[in-house]
Image (cartoon, rainbow, N blue to C red; front, side, top):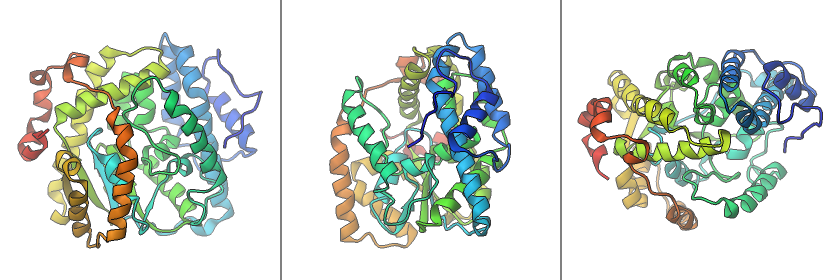
Length: 392
């Protein structure tokens, strides 16, 4: 677990990028980053925090997370300098799960994680990567155990249903590694910054993917395997994902975009409550229809240039209706057997997750002032191309 120093910047202060870097260096005892690609987006994040009237609340919510991201990056850079043979180590990434947010990517990645033939990126190791765990300690490393113990205390006391939850020893999104390059929607979800939201739609994501591959090389050095990656915004950044992982095949989850949008609004509002102290409903109303539509439209348009078997379409409604049948179809596409043992493990995971799923909040477009006719033009081409996505 990350250690905190009494001399690190504390609550009540404005965020300063040089102080964040100094705090990360003090926390780790390390000086040299791998490169400075993180600086431009971090400067934008800091400027946007400072521009908001809730800047002290946001700074208090995000300061330690920013220091931790920089600290992990320092440790990764140091580990790679000590092990230069890892610099060009090949990455076996046969499967990447992507899609609009709130379309079933999480359940799909958790079901794939039930199969020991795949190597998931785990929640704890994505943000605390050095020293890397071994294959035997992936889910028993003291850092993992300690984080899960904290989660087990926190979850029962959260006074609302949590739409997205990751256990420390379960699969996570690549976003939490890319956040260490500070190009990630996980920052945007708490900032409520139009400038940063626009930046993520158009920035060069190559440095975020390059850094992710560095982290993966560190992690697989002691716990190798065939990586199954998951992040909804791989679809938003589909061009960069294709370049970073040229041999990967993509599982693309689909859902009625109006339902996905309403669910995303509810999810973002919870991040706002933590970071802002309130929900910026105007920001959610104005920003997320276009952002979620780009998750659908970008891969749809690039797909035309790809081999037909590079992408598998998985419809959320069908997957949730019969998850095992859906996974059997995925395994057939991948050329793998869905063995009785793996099927049993998948059913066991669903049984454990059912109680949490039952408490998830309801939502509708009306919650944030959206009307279907208002946002429909953003999804017209997508729904015409994938009409099954409209099914609830």
